[in-house]
Length: 178
Length: 246
Image (cartoon, rainbow over all chains, first blue to last red; front, side, top):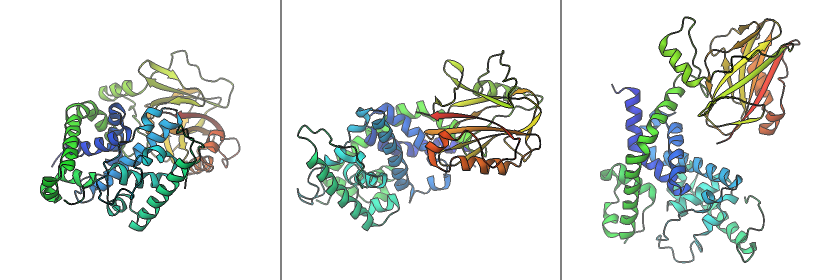
């Protein structure tokens, strides 16, 4: 029988890269991603059985890592560490839904922090990870309909927010959007 | 060409290429092949640099959580002492100054010490400590009493710190450095420590219930809660707030 330390080492070696990539995407800083990776993995280790279930482990990793890193971005923003909070690596628009489907993919990084946590995760799923609505629903444990609703609201409110920002791009208020 | 696949699908492919079922798309999509290459490079970066630097910490953190403590761990030194336990204690428990005398003339006093790279420093009320910080405690009572030491965070999660096990409050006579130490969890925010000492031993459930009540109003209420309510008259209390700041 595999001893616990070997088991943890093996799982970290196998699944750590997936955690690290999520953290890199959302934090954009290798040192911050390294710290976040170990923190996320310690959280994941609290449920060993789930961590070893190959059918469900990846959506779970995505959810835990995404929530953790979004919290880090939020905290960095509060502390005025904008470098961590600004650069969000959006996925190329390759979904073939036409140029008007998501009119400005940079919306995600411009206004992300103004939304609640679950809406942020939905937006990250679409714009950063390039996920289908069904994949996001599975990741977050919500319905596809809820995903669509939150995404529509995100895009609509993001447009409104950008429309009322000043020409220089300076944000006009600090309210959290619904 | 079919739509580009998500990073979730690419992760599944990296984990098990045979099961993922996206090979036909990858063969025909240069964009996704480039995305996959990037992910492979990042994976290699993890294995070469991140894994060696962080594995020990992951093992340590995981090991500490498996001891049965929900959010804290304690290292208790047996009365006779054994070399291994003593060595571990030195690692996690900063030693307060030898001239510490406790707070004479007060019903109950508590001092908290945190270990960091520069050695041990005393934590002031409301002081910042890093998440995961190692703490050690000294308590002093004006008269013999039965002691519980607990903590509560803004979510109302209560941790029993000392005695760590059993249902019997510890005897406290004069001042004492509590054996062992505790490590804070990694959740940022306020954590309030309460030392409670009474002539008759209180049930720990009563202390835990009172501690939960202190956090009922959230973080700000916890910061303002300097006394546990609902404990018997004559119960001496001491409290100290720490802010876990990354």
